[in-house]
Image (tube, rainbow, N blue to C red):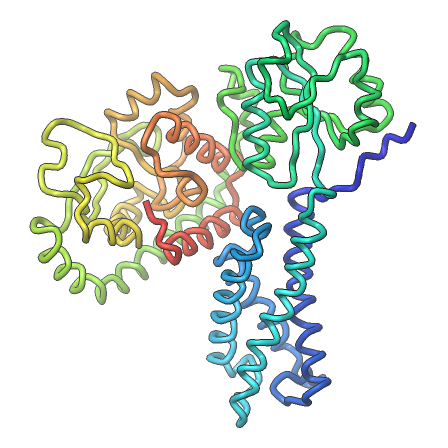
Length: 462
């Protein structure tokens, strides 16, 4: 029996394919267009070929900002078309505005239009092929879950939501509940038929979600046979974390040190120095730029908010120490006259002008003062109010771990999670925060910054 699983593409492999073949499609299309029309602006000269790398750099950055590498969105041609137009438009604009590192503008301005159209067509052809072939069901990763009945449906739902090409096709139940209680689309596999079922259903990987004591002797021996013959078997929390970029706190025990080998960057002096230096530079630059925005904000506040422009509020910071955060007011005066309340997207206390400030993240600008004072960082878990911290710590395991790093102006949970309107939403955001704390590094920080720009541009601020 062959133990080579059906061909599929991992998340990282698909993202690499998108990045590489986007650049290949752009380059080949430009070479083809030059060969047909002999437009000098598109000629790759031996004496000056560096502009190609500039073009690649601009495109890669803006493709990340406009979410062309988001696998969920990359699976939709309509969404991809919109994002390609935005990315290519911005790339071409920056390209022609930097002639000191790019070709001098041609006398015939139609070449610029052809330059733009060539990139769009080349990318659309390649992305259509990606959606039709690589993102097609034939390349789905087919998973078999080993776990107890309480978790099976939730596990399948979480994995399907996280990755459109990750399909749970069946399960091996480790407790006594009957198959009728499960999602009917999932195949119930008996332990005795495990090896035959793997071949029959072209299973790519087994994910074990049950505790060690929940796996019986017969099942354990079957898994050992598969493992010895090279079949992929992985633990659920690792798979979940890899696919969703969240830590599944609801599936781990209280011994969090076993599951959270926190990033060395949290104590790395060089990283912390670079982080602090960048925070200060960023805060000073934002405060300088805000000098030109504040007059407009004053006018908008006078017309739409009718009251004080700034307000302070106590929040919990590093190591659980409280501090006062500074923000632009986005709610009506005396919004919490009846006590602390959860905010929501449709909160009637938010003024019309306040909603604009929130969606564009302008209300967060005054927190640059907190960054300069060292109370906050540019990137980290959002600071919460003491009354909510106490409440959430009692209901959500590991919630206080968020306070092991400085709170941030933006964070992984802000660019990936939903608006926190309930305990369930807060749990999801905590999972993202713990992932950041666990994997914190300069590349993840850069990724968050790019996604924050996307959040502002797509008007999704919280």
